[in-house]
Image (cartoon, rainbow over all chains, first blue to last red; front, side, top):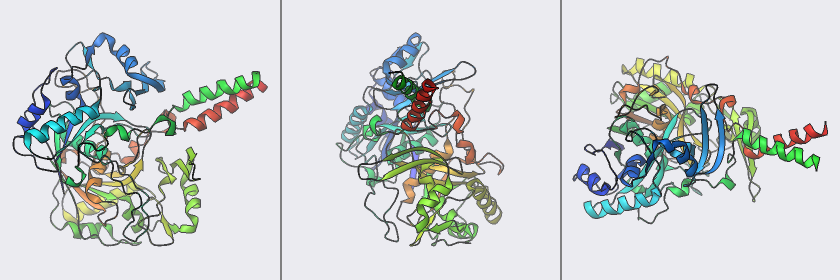
Length: 253
Length: 253
């Protein structure tokens, strides 16, 4: 059985805020070994002072962009850029966020969410004396499916995958699905309790203590598939255009 | 707060099984209005007799395939085909499943998972006298991220999206993330309790009764993004090759 709940009493976060202290105060003595905290990346970014002025939103997106993956402009003239950002994450607008931040600012993603998760997990383990795992979550769109879901962009002290490779099913046959991404599933589960407009950026999942482990387990960066191994590293229109140019050039030469 | 648990006592499912009866028996009187059941598509397929012989696995994949999206062969000679299947879902091997089925068979996805969800939801509401929602879940890989997560391929009596378009955040600014796909998040949450090898194909989520509604709400088909609106409707290598051929042909003509 799984229980998922939000920690009440997390105040508005400003640059320099002591997230470990605030989360520990909000949790009180309610946490146990094996609990997993899912912290919205937004408050991690705020605590780390990852603000830029709103005038620079498009520049901020460009600065965070390592590679354009795909782009499309709607009939109304709105352009959506799907890019690979510094963290290797493929997302719209490089994850730059204009909501839930002070007027005139936009918020970048944390510089290194795995490190942020590390600091929070280590701090909470020390402060509260309980062996908890920490995920830093962000809302991402996806290919082929409408809408958004929450995923893990940072993680510490948890197994981000359940490695079932080489195991069998109830009849002794090899499992086909071998790598459930439990970190993303944990993030998704907590999105159901957090709400998008309310101030509930920290949630706890209890019931999968088996997923909690040493702080040096791989982080969420290990979930990102490298571009060279990704069949969708480029949008279809962009790849077609690249091919077209090369094909035409090959004949002209 | 959310609680997620599995229903014990679901037996091995064979063709013609009365899923409503079996789930109702397993649930007893423990369900309440607003509970959401997430049923693994595998048992829906089994009850609907969606077996084909194992010799035909590759043929089965081809038969379920509407369109090849992308394909890659590893150094070891293993080919992964990402295809759009009859349900519009983009997935590896069209969702054809060779594990957890009797020797010599493979299992196709349900013919119409939304209809299956409808029948189960309607049957349970009648039989148990509680207003429940039903999701039919399946394990899917994804672009850009390793591993798999569970998503909703069928749904009845629930809002598959939380429609936040036009709403604002705590400071009154328009929300950027406007369409959380709660159906996929519910499916992901239950994957954390079901296990892949164990016989726990039905789980319950309690705590989002606000998502349960009339049986005629849109189903999970509404989550699938139509190919013409999907920037990743074709793998990068495939699109490049298409463009290359067209570019070369354009110069030759």
